[in-house]
Amino acid sequence: MGSSDASGPARKWVDYNSLHNDLREFLERADRLGEVRHIKGASWDREMAGISEMFGKEQPDNPPALLFDEIPGFDKGYRVVWGAGNSRNRVALTYGFPEPSNATDLVRAYRDRMRGGFKQIPPKTVKTGAVLENIDRDDAVNLDKFPTPRVHEVDGGRYLGTHDLVIMRDPDTGWINVGTYRVQVYDKNTVGLWISPGKHGRLIREKYFAKGKSCPVAISVGTDPLLFITAGNEIDFGVDEFAYAGGHRGRPFEVVESELHGLPIPAHDEIVLEGEIMPDDVRTEGPFGEFTGYYASGEQLQPAVRIRRVYHRNDPIITTARPGRPPHDFIYAKSVSKAATIWDEMEKAGLHGITGVWSHEAGGARMFNVVAIKQMYPGHARQAGHLAFACHAGNYLGRWVIVVDDDIDPTNTFEVIWALSTRCDPATSIDVIGKAWSGPLDPMLPKGTVENSRAVIDACRPWSRRDSFPPVAEASREVMAETYAKWRFLLDE
Image 1 (tube, rainbow, N blue to C red):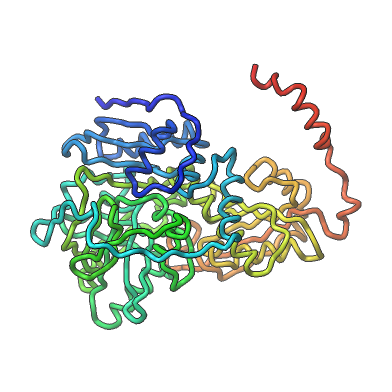
Image 2: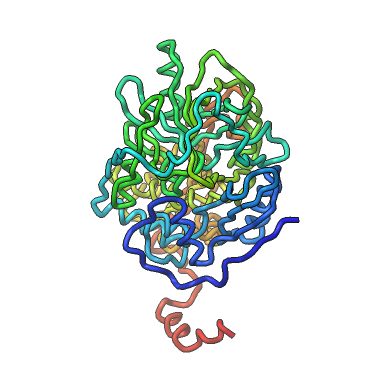
């Protein structure tokens, strides 16, 4: 039988002078806020994932981080954490934002930081770090010593990499790219690495293969939530994700050079694998239940990764993100960063009047994006919708973009559906665009297809009728302010 203990009542927000140094310090801070559940005795085989899914269904608005220890069959201290950064408070901790009251607070804080002179801070190379406490080389490599989870019943194997960093160097330019791609364990020293077509890691891998070479790679499977969110976001080609994350952190990430290929690996991460993607060792990868909620990519033949080094801390922690039918345990954090990045890119492209953006959790933080604007000129709403799906952050695997007026909270599904129901004419308010960038994770695509269609929906008051459109039937802000001031105590009874 497993056991669980809560961390006590939530405590008041702590105004830390700087962001955490590593995953462990992050979890300690989250624990002080009552944001971590410590669970002992749960199995790696679907049981940990089932508990994560249970919390996702029962507490979708604010699930705890789940830290598992004493996993049957593995050494005590070899732990797994699920959903490390996936709550309102833990997203704020991740970025160093003030205590938020809702998702909009987080999106605005991110967007304001990007507008306020955000600068990237390159990583700092150091000689040593906690990740080098243990180094397994060549024949000593044994991935079986880690409690790698089996997430879903139909999965093709155990997945060590879901909340991970995949670190590569462009062979032509030397650019370091950090992405997040799934990693399946085949045996004690071989893993599969699935990368969707068009992703930066895939482009780099193919450059090595075109030269007749294997592709050097380092994979961190126990990392800081800030690095994980950064690696999984759409950041422009040529940008160093370590530097981008360092800009949010306010100081550089420390990295050490890996033994084999000199790749930068976070000096204080928990577990890092190093090896080569082998073009002549092709194996079946998958299936794996993904963030869209389906097994859309199925089984595929993919080049395997031969692992020749494993670096890890004492008592290492695997970081895990459970994809599947939303809500899942990384989707809230993803929605915040995706929405804020779309907002930032739209403004940088010259669009004014944006009052809010949200990438809804139900759409996997990609497929259902809502933009709120204060209309300023004819065609403003259509321009906003087309730009939201065309910008880098909003393009991959998109499906719906809905544009609403500034009196609608884009994070509030009820209000968005009300705007759709009362301000949208299906015959004239919907534009459909074809041949857009999608991928194998899209369940609507026939196999072998990588392009989809998407809809831009104008759910704003028509510009030509903006002054004569029927007024909204609700109390004014002044009346509601007076009501709250006098009668708010009733809500607490």
